Length: 176
Image 1: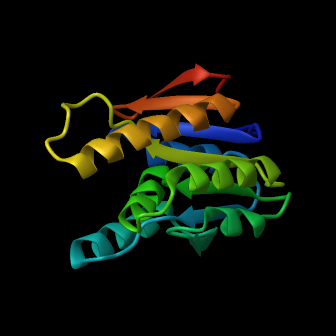
Image 2 (image 1 turned 135 degrees about the vertical axis):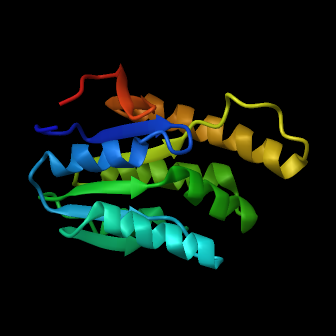
């Protein structure tokens, strides 16, 4: 991938679809300094291993900012000459749900921060709506909130790409 990116891109797909790798290739293709905004929290050894593997896969050349909850503050650190990757909106939403924050307020703040960000941003998110209806209230709320968040991000984004089995498909805009 080479080329410039629009102000906001959304890369969406299922678990292990290749969405993060694809988003990283979009970012790397710009030739600009790269900022990685990580939303994962390492609550156990398996998650620590996953985060470490993600870092190894990503390689050098990234400025990493840990922002499990405060994406607006992380975006405010961005410079106009950079390109930003947020990985991922799903874990950010999970963190807010578990903290019992007001999701509508947090989403509005995120959308405002994205609009104000001086750098192009690519957000990775999971598509979770293709499965069965979960059996518990928290899981159902998560699925519903994730669907709403994805819709809001897709409406705002200039480029929306779904990744299935490592293959990207542009849903909105054109791939660079």
